[in-house]
Length: 252
Ligand code: SAM
Image 1: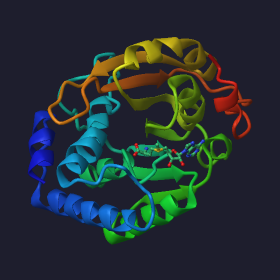
Image 2 (image 1 turned 120 degrees about the horizontal axis):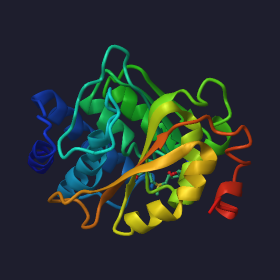
Image 3 (image 1 turned 45 degrees about the horizontal axis):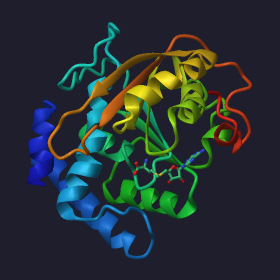
Image 4 (image 1 turned 90 degrees about the vertical axis):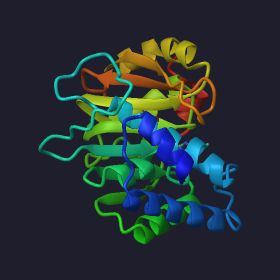
């Protein structure tokens, strides 16, 4: 896990032997399950460290800060405060970015939401194998779970990677954020354009674009960015629309 350790150091994160052992176990289980279920196309030891684990950890740069503030720093401001941060990973797949965040910050409360059953089974297996506490694995669609009182407007931090375009993703994610919460999407080289093209959708859903942060970090895909959207007002109850509608008729 040397590449991960080096990369994490450039984010200001010091991975302990315990963290590294957890990531090693995650790698082994991911590649072993991948022979039976198609979980990921990225399976090489080095690529998993950078393109899955390190890439996921970059979300921590945008952890909500106590006093707010617009700028996203270059190193992780780990200051969780008195109540543990409640985080949801929407469309988690094989656990990215949610599980690496939880391995790094065991005190967060985490929900992993995934629509595909076999991936949900893998996520449950990983949570058990890594002995993670306060993780809920949910089998469902964002369009439905986003209306459940237990999950609607509850989360401090909503993360997603490779799930949908920003116009669609905003409708999946912003209903989960409470007012004052934050949504972070991992995006590629078109992030700037995509993030701005969806501004109308953020406004409709009670949010606004805070930052598009380039991530010039060795090992990550060139052009990687974080798109950070903050929630300022409740999301109107009609959103998210019925399953499939956000992607068929995007808000922008
Ligand atoms: N986030 C993971 C990653 O970056 O490796 C998985 C990315 S995969 C390309 C997209 C995942 O989002 C799939 O596992 C899919 O089942 C899930 N997904 C897509 N739309 C969803 C929705 N509306 N609600 C919940 N999960 C969804």
